[in-house]
Image 1 (spheres, one colour):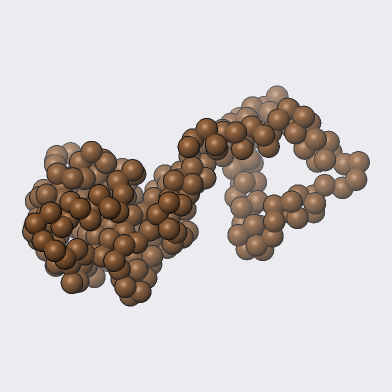
Image 2 (spheres, rainbow, N blue to C red):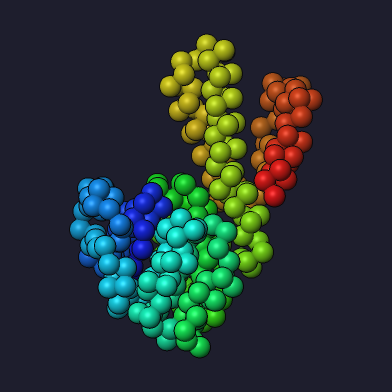
Length: 263
């Protein structure tokens, strides 16, 4: 299955390298485009075997999935460049540009024709670079087979969830902004660890591994977070004392207020 990724910047490069790294997609099945030679050279270095090009219209020919991985303000001119080459009967178009709606994509793609291809909006987060993204996908005009094809792509790059388009913003706040919020906790915990006598690099490794373990407990067991908290908070113990002190400082309230401030 040929996949065309138009835009070989950080996101496009991460997607291409992740798909090849999964072992499910061959490098020669993927073609990436960019406007500058250094960008394409960087891609070839990071992901040997992936085909590169500067002609977007040529790249989409024969592709089952066409991925738009450019900055939001470049999506409309990119679509004008490729829309005559899109075959709506057999190609799917996936945009990873934040803020560009399915309605806008549809309008731009059908400016000079009646039919539109299967359309998808996908919102990954930066962990896609290590194939651990939480990606949200919305769809317009796609059948079950095409939807599953696109979902399979993003499942190779981490977790993928199919949602209605209005939910994309909430998903972005929780998962994309959420990366920064989680890392800010890591930074604070590391600083606390250093104050307790732990070397910084060791503290960072400890806290990061602990977060990974906490996440796996929730993902594998499916429990409510409070159920896992109960398993480590013994009466009169140090964990509950630490939690209570954090709550007195407004920990949960600060997290909720930070999330709501992103709206």
